[in-house]
Length: 229
Image (cartoon, rainbow, N blue to C red; front, side, top):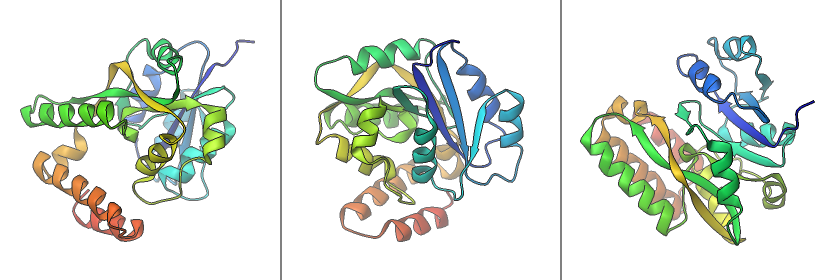
């Protein structure tokens, strides 16, 4: 039986339009893919099952709880948390290993590339990648990866409706370095295209500022949803 060295965990909710292509792109020997569904009412689960993917139905929706459940079911020593609309570079297992092998590294992520020709999104990419490199603060859409032992020691993702990735990385930074792999993930532009690049960017920054000033994550999430995202 083939040894599993990497578990890819996807928290999903109603992703029937994106999930098949993402799952097919992950097919690699030694890589386990775990889809954790948060109560989809579309064909997300059925699509994954037809592709032979391990599916776990979460008792509640929310990326934090879904990712924690996926980690608990993971067989590998290394975990990668991936959004349903994000595609990894072809040699992603090797890049993950090389990144985690760097001294004092506790976790890593990929550079961000947004699947759009919109020139404003090139500015967004540069900002995200600069923040990730110099502040060691990548977010979930960049594919966060780390050893399962480190994940367990950290306590996992906080059960927050928003900012769970931010808080998780913030805690990990106290243990060591957060490094970037030498390649980019390609993520969908859909959330920027939905309400516009400038508006989406401003909303995201306001959410971060609100979190810093102690506004409750539930209120921030409600505001985020009301903004059209």
